[in-house]
Amino acid sequence: MLINTGVPTREQLDRLLPSPERRARGPYAMVECFQEIPCNPCSTACPFDAILPMKDINEIPAIDLDRCTGCGICAGVCPGLAIFIIDESKKDGTATVTIPYEFRPLPEKGETVNAVNREGDVIGDATVTRVLASKRTKTPLITVEVPAELVHDVRFISLIDEQSFSDDTSSESQKSPVSHETAPKTDDEDEIIICRCEGLTLRVIRDLIREGYTTVDEIKRISRAGMGPCQARTCGPLIAAEIARMTGQQVAEIQPSAHRAPVKPLPIEFFLGGDSE
Amino acid sequence: MMYNIDLVIVGGGPAGLMAANTAAEAGAKVLLLERDGHLGGQLVKQTHKFFGSEKQHASMRGIDISTMLGERLDAFDGRVTVWTNATAIGFYEDGVITVDHDGVYKKVKPERVVVATGASEKFLSFPNNDLPGIYGAGAVQTMMNVYGIRPGHRVLMIGAGNIGLIVSYQLMQAGVSVAAIVEGLPHIGGYAVHACKVRRAGVPILTSHTILRADGTESVESATIARIDRSWNVIPGTKKTIDCDVICISVGLTPLAELLWQAGCEMRYIPSLGGSVPLRNDCLETTVKGVYVAGDVTGIEEASAAMVEGHLAGLEAAASLGFKSDNYDAERKDCMDQLAALRSGPTAEKIRSGLACAESR
Image (cartoon, rainbow over all chains, first blue to last red; front, side):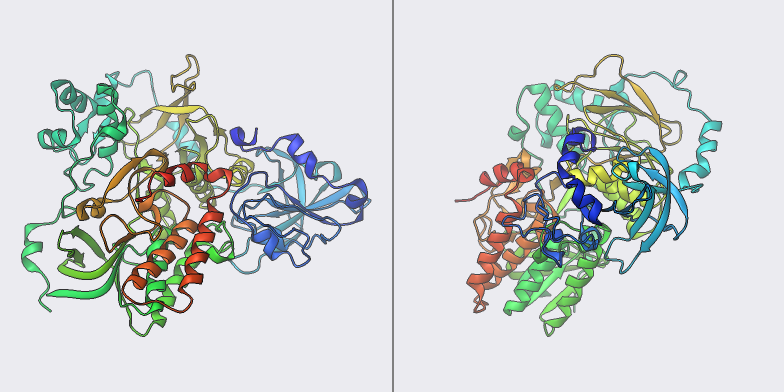
């Protein structure tokens, strides 16, 4: 399912597919937006009113394919990069798909790139036929030609022989593999830091709770948890959750520690200075 | 000396910027405090296009919205003063706000306050969670998108909410590989379109998985993850070790509400809004008269809602001082309508249930 994997199901996609006649006639938009979210730029940007106006901005875009010219304006504005322009009208066994692409470098016209599907797998080659990169507010649109039978699967491209930053050092990390077996085995409680500023482990906090310090303020006073630069923004919720767990309360019942000024540690001389303008 | 002013806005992010714009437009004299050296808050790190409708600048990139809203402040004949590198460090019962402004201690006594301090990131406890290479997603975004520094070579992202998905995408745009996105819930929390974007770029999204530990000598070298059941118990035999030099934690935000606690605002712990939030009325005024709130400090939401809340809080704070334009009623209604629309869909169900508990009357 889409919400478990990030990949739309075949049924969801099939429902978007226009009639064979429409597909043969010329380019059209595939709006692969399957979730009601508050978003409507596609419908307000469409110059042909093909993406129907929304009464409620949470509506899933509805498209009138008789009005859609495949111009691609919606694909350039869609914040979700979820609109693709498909052209299956050529009768030579190839078809084109226009893909919103926000990576650098952009491919060049004529370049051969990897054709990638919705799962991120390379499924063949594609030839770049157009690169449309206007203003930086818009998303560059890359049109690629692929075998016609792949046009409903290709939704991304990657450059061939792309030297990604991660590849530069992948060999290095292989040279020094981590030996997990030899890593010292210690009890987890000692390896979990709860208050980073004061270096307090989960064991320290749990021992204090067992001793009867069962409010965030008490733990703060006895251990200094929450008195460092972060002022309990990191550890406070973790300590509250631990108290709740060990004392059988709800987190909502645990009072946060007192919030006093100043909200960040400052040297005393700062307060002696002051503004005499 | 004491600075006396109509309105102080604490926080120059999407909510604070909108509040400053609206209040100044209505005629109020505004002092905008921003902890960072520049305005924009989280907007400056948002290189992706925003959702929403035109009114919330949908389809613009966050960083461009930030620039636009900041530049607008210049148009108000000096009614807006901006202090950057200015942290509000205390809110006292007599209404005085103390500020660390570029290392100088200042005291401000405003007639009204809009607190738009945003949120801080939640953290996770797991063994070796203090190894160098373990970051919050906000820190990763700051390094990459503000300072142009890549945090590492291969990242394991923890959390498939919108921030986890977006930061994964931005990491890939920066040329960093993302080994996987690990999510404890059985489903992806962020928008499906964001998930599709990272999936087709080759990143697996592992729902019903959690991080068990990090390992490495000097810094992170690997992470161990495993599949979990609905009660968060590890399913035996599912442990996997993933090589990575960065573990990015994106498990949610919590409202940054210290000043509201200090001011004596009535607070309530509402899990679906991210933590303790101030009770407030439909003008976004808290239980302390004259103290208004907007943005993530009222509960964690999208930046588009933060902008509208900022608009509303600025409008109401100014109006309560007598700065009320002719179209006040229309503007107020428009804000309400926008918020209702942004919050009406199924993805905002949690927000709606949380907000129902945050009303002060």
